[in-house]
Image 1 (cartoon, rainbow, N blue to C red):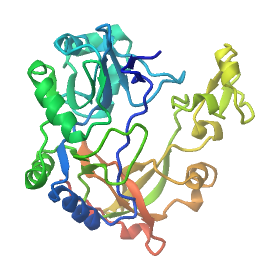
Image 2 (tube, rainbow, N blue to C red):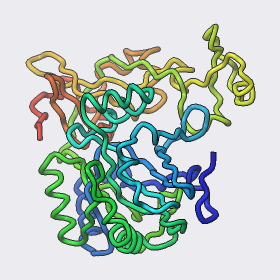
Image 3 (cartoon, one colour):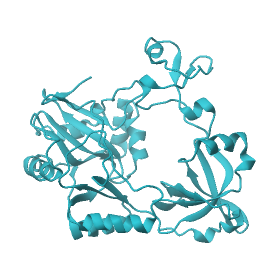
Image 4 (cartoon, rainbow, N blue to C red):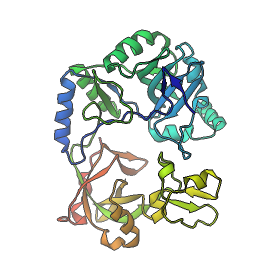
Length: 378
């Protein structure tokens, strides 16, 4: 499938990627550098909604199409426009040949998992869930094509001021449509504080002179500034782990090397089997973790009154730990790590770290040093 506007295939265009600080950058340095960038006045920024990145296209014939950042199992993007007919109906006045970038989200139930749990349903089930609970909204923050013209090479400032605000704003005022409100300088930094104080995820800033660069992650061109806990937390591996997801759904299907026989569950030798797959042989692509029998996440705990209390599932871990937490757990149980996260959450009696990750291992510490008193709920 192709959707060509002004000679460019937008449907198969990889999304531009957000740049971020390295994991080793201290939190205080991240904060000071983020503030410096914001206060420079060189960036526009707006609130980041917690949903899923989406591209909505009204093609040259007036048909609507909606795709996410990632491809489906077959290596192509899935068109979900029929899953959000109320949004498409509210956008009928935008001209043909227009491409909008935004976030599909639930205003009263933010979170990407909440959105995907609905959009990944069959169409009728998705529509039924929205009717019974809450309808999805579209938060628009960029324009890549307008009225048949590709405007990706224009600056971000021009795309926002001349197209999103001037050409489109009047026809984007509807029930399930929201347009990003951009600020800069001190107003933008104040917005960040307001978003965090209200429990929001953070802001996204983009250099005003930036063109849209598909599939690139240029340093300091566009940056998500999220909430992070001020201090790190020492926690230990408690021996529990999560089983891996079975089916591979990434975008590298043609070159994927991990396959199994769907009928016998027998692993095929590592290799390229895409042509066999599309020829309808009974094989399916599986995740690397499933293929090797590794864990997808490892549990970390802290001590409270002499007893371990689960704190977080950490998935961004080295392959060695993914393998050995199953094959040789005693090597890891009790080992202490310094963790950081965007936020500590306490929901329904359970603690968790939002976007938790390992900062470093602390082999100089013992599990008894990982006291529950470190936990401070925002």
